[in-house]
Amino acid sequence: MDIDSFREVIKKREETDNEWDYGIEQCWKKEIEILSEDIPSTIEFLKNECTADEYSWISEVIDDVVDKVPSKELVQCYTELMAKFPEECQKYNIKGVIEICEGILKWEEENGKK
Image (cartoon, rainbow, N blue to C red; front, top):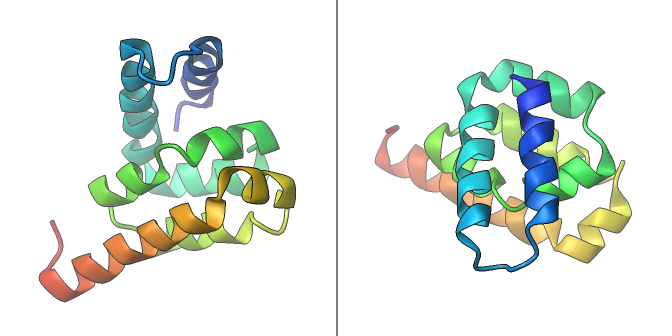
């Protein structure tokens, strides 16, 4: 995972205020690309370098990452960070996002991998 590129995209995302702005969609697209490129290194990033702010921004796209690259390990790692970042979890409904990710994994399991 290219952490520097990811952090640049997050910075751009933070600067985009309008929720329906085209720029947000472009940021999301780039985040998904970076996070799904190498799942083991993304998991390492989450475990060792991810900040609370980054964790909350990832919540906007984690379900899309899991849809693109179904990974139980990624969802488990992201779930485990709930204990580390409880304020973000409450503020951004991270539990709801994780439930969506788990639903994607369940669907993939029942209907075959992509």
